[in-house]
Image (cartoon, rainbow, N blue to C red; front, side, top):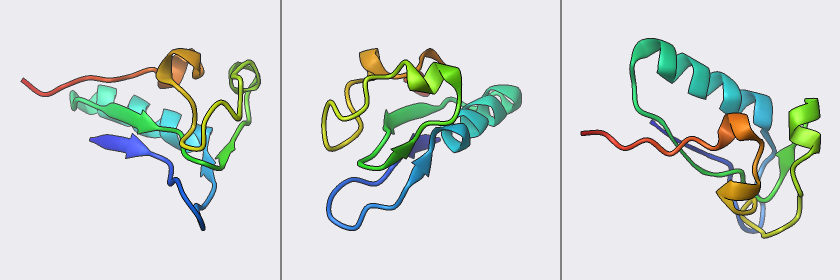
Length: 77
């Protein structure tokens, strides 16, 4: 599963809780998940999200700067 927010002109919001829920569901189902980007309009909702340095890039920053719960980049075998 590839997860990511939209980038560019007209990008819609991506609630980080949505991404986190998808990651949790994939792990429960034994499915590999790759969080590609948080997008141009991430919506921070938890304390973990608020620690993230929003605005680093137009595509949602670099994965090393994201909330820990969204730093998931698994590859299928």
